[in-house]
Image (cartoon, rainbow, N blue to C red; front, side, top):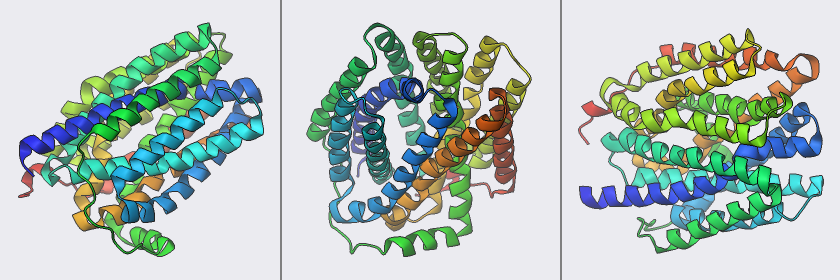
Length: 391
């Protein structure tokens, strides 16, 4: 594949990803607040989110055979259609039990969507360009996380949650139409479906894959704090949905600015240094927040902590693709991606249990300690430098 053609396809994927994430960020900004308005308890929100993420983990089991049977482009297309329908239904349904079912389906299908997109990016990139391309896509995605929260805060305050879901579904529909017109590299042939359980066990037998799994999961553990619990803290502090939107907007700004240069830097100096420094910043930020009571100071610290997140987020996936063979992508990428929902599950459930017994600020200790563990794992990992690759 020629370089110009590869770049064109990566740019197309980045564009469609932007529209999809814009749709999802509008809902994601107020998702925890929306659930808390129904459940009236932040701990219950944590437990319900844990239920959703279990469904997400199950989705990765389906993703393996779907990728190999139908190909990633088809899987991504149909996952967007189902998500669009679910978003629309959220706008008209108020029953908590139906919302729980729809939420579980949303997370399950989301796992397939995430897996399909990651494979499309990898298949349209050279190995030595992966970290750069991942950085580019994550930066563009985070622009959506800049715009989406601003819209969400305004829409939720002025029009209500139902209209917000309808607008999100409409944007997803636009993404579906555009994606169907794009010329993305298709899967040329199908492979014999893998034995799913066996594939998951095989994945975890390899030490490099196992290390990548845990290191990648750390950033998802962290995002639970910012996207699930901090919005609830903001509302419970007497602030508005607009403040939630402004906070999520501000969190995304450092990632937009730094993820492309950090992605390129990781390719030159190696992944290890980026992981150690990035997770150190996150650990320090969370532990400092435990000792602070002023809500605005906490928000500023967490916004600045996104500089550390920008070091980690785009490089973890690039690192994984660098340590496996190209022929193993469809087989091992779904098990690898289960670290997203597993860590959201662990963080949501553990934080929910803590909130049943201790004050809200106690969860900062939980997330700080988790990030310290990620630092220790990063220190022990073997460095890998993409720039030294021949391919």
